[in-house]
Amino acid sequence: MVTRPNLRLARYLVPVIIVLAIIFSIRQCGNQEKPSEHPRDYAAIAQEGILRVATEYNSISFYVDGDTVSGFHYELIQAFARDKGLKTEITPLMSFEERLEGLSEGRYDVIACGLLATSELKDSLLLTSPITLNKQVLVQRKESGENGENDSLYIRNQLDLAGRTLHVVKGSPSILRIQNLGNEIGDTIYIKEIAKYGPEQLISMVAHGDIDYAVCDESIARTAADSIPQIDINTAISFTQFYSWAVSKQSPALLDSLNTWLDKFQKGKEYRRIYKKYYDKK
Image (tube, rainbow, N blue to C red; front, side):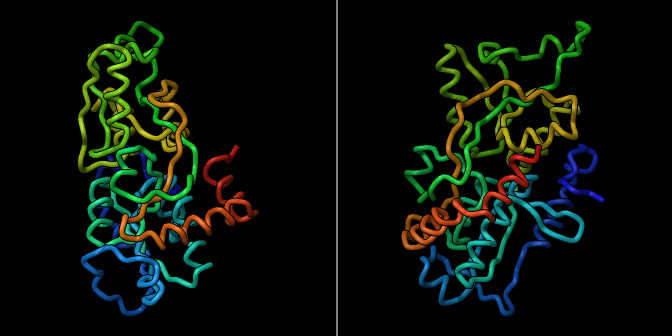
């Protein structure tokens, strides 16, 4: 039985996985109305009784485990909805840009996955109180140890990134960090944005030699490394930073409701159990 998104290239890159994940979107309401064309605030959400959520399909946020749905952000947003007497309508999307677009157009009320709290996102969105701490890491293949071909590709420190091409999910906040890192080392680091794949798919492509380098969140990379021993994730791209959820700037009451709930919930046993399940398994 598959217990995590399959990271083998032959399967994981098949678009059917994405389609199945979307079909399996959690729609716990009876009669669904057409989403509004503008962002809603908490009063409108409470009146309808449905919270529309965009998330990412990966081994941390949201994934299918047999006949159930799991994920840190999935369990957290479900707990919020439960405590507020709301039902959830959850849609997993691979594209970072699609999540942002859906939020701005009112198709989703909240983006519930790990969003790096950058100043750029703060300019366009309302970010919740920090949900987790995380950092961006380089994903590459391990050294062969036998003066093989991969030894010349292996990055031992950030200075070695000069002139290399790093693959990232299109629109990822990590792009700005990579650009700043290029300035810090005084050389160009090339960036290739990938529109149709998520971070775990990029990791799989690295492992199978389709690309040499990818950048993703350390939590996702560590989960992948458990089943893909040939990858190396020991080179940090960023410092440890705050990760949050996001709502539209037109939804300040929803933000207040989320933050008030998070402040209380994160001090309780249920949050510690959920956090340990996904981030502190050892």
